[in-house]
Length: 352
Image (tube, rainbow, N blue to C red; front, side, top):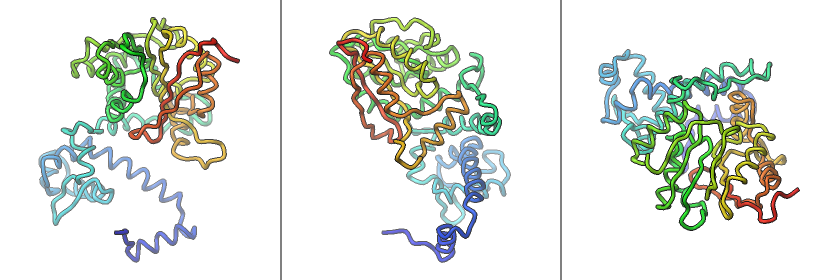
């Protein structure tokens, strides 16, 4: 059944359609409010409380040490967003949101939402970055900086949603022995690939702060014997090898075109004959298409590493120049705004 608009909702929709109401005001006010409300549900323990069962604002406030009036306002906003349902005076997580917001769920994304407090601070520096061209380098934190934990846990919670599908999609050589995961942080993609290939062990090469958190995640999963974290810089450190496969997931948007080409050339030299190079990332739409959410991601990467999202043709060009065959593009159901490419070294060497 199609949803129906209340009369006042229809008038609002018509006013926006006819450009009688200022859309930028709604985007600024409600975009900001929506983000902060969803984040607050994690930090204030509201989702965790409602995961135990329906509760009134008074009960949630009492158990979590909150103001009752503020809690009621927050619950009403979460209900408006559809994350919480209300029956009479009691609220509960909806069936859909329980999958993502119940801390006991294997698909919980609360860590990613908490990471948004760091991102909130970075976006506050947007105007400064656009004026100066200087970004807020999120990979320059000291090894013990607490932001590493929030960052890597957030990326892990997203990765575990798609890692099994990625592992099924890659065509490693028979009985592979060695996998290198460049900047793999949490190591979860490598772990899922190792689970699929009993003969395989993996090395995750990443910065010290990232590797420290990744080791904890892999140890908790009981995979420390097969997924090893090595501290280093993927741009300068030896890549080892020869490897049956190399992963470069969500890395190229942090690098310049020159850095990507140089990295790809080093990867080719580190692969065994018949080995694969897998690249997973966000890509900009073709020039003749209307800008979409990738535009916001491109700005985000500019803000946090002075880099950008690239076009798929850019990737194909770097692979060709580095001596890889034309890549296989893999469509992923769990990652609709990303693309996975798998390439093998060209038998004829580097091509022009």
